[in-house]
Amino acid sequence: MRTVLKGAWVATAMTAAFVTAAGTASAATTDVVTATATGAGTRSFALTIDDGPSPTWTNQVLDLLKEREVKATFCVIGDHARQYPDLIRRIVDEGHSLCNHSMHHVNPTTQSPDQQRADIQEASDAIHAAAPGASIDFYRAPEGGWTEDAKQYAASQGMQPIGWSVDTEDWRRPGADAIFENYKRAFQGGGVILMHDGSQENDRSQSVEAMGRILEDLSNNGYYDDRPAVLG
Ligand SMILES: [Zn+2]
Image (cartoon, rainbow, N blue to C red; front, side, top):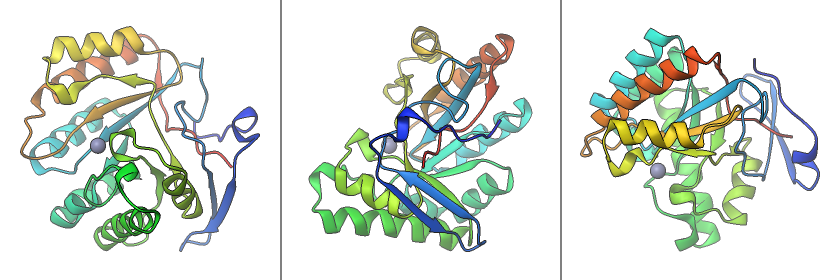
């Protein structure tokens, strides 16, 4: 299901509409979304995968998602999009969603407003250089360093800020069992799950193994894949 929820979410939100190259209207708000489009309390989930793409891990994740027929949202770093444009194209070709996760993974709270805007724009440009015309529907601040400037600029570019409701803490590499338990403890229907497929220098084999078990568990319990909500 890909319906857009409206309601309390947008009550105080600044809404920014824009028109994509394809001519379809799109909009986003400055709210940091932590639920799926279908909504909290439903039997949906949104899997978000950060810090790639990286050849080894992103390809393994994409293979796994294809096998399980699950669509995810990839929060990619501009530097990596530039390095591995073919992986951006594979993400798009296989029907997954794109999320701007900054150019160099610098926390926006450490940047001036101009730097934040330039950083976000540079990352979108890098993604579009790899996949011209691809829709980038989401923005996620590195390290959760949300600022009003970053949220407003993302929304003005049609990117909904997204957070998460389930931190698997896979980036700490605590072992696949611990990653799975972190998911199991925190997940509730309609949740947004945070995992990682980058960077190349970091071994993400635990993330890939745990992701397979998480997706199997979600499927066994009747949950279906969705995207984070786009408001506005
Ligand atoms: Zn990150």
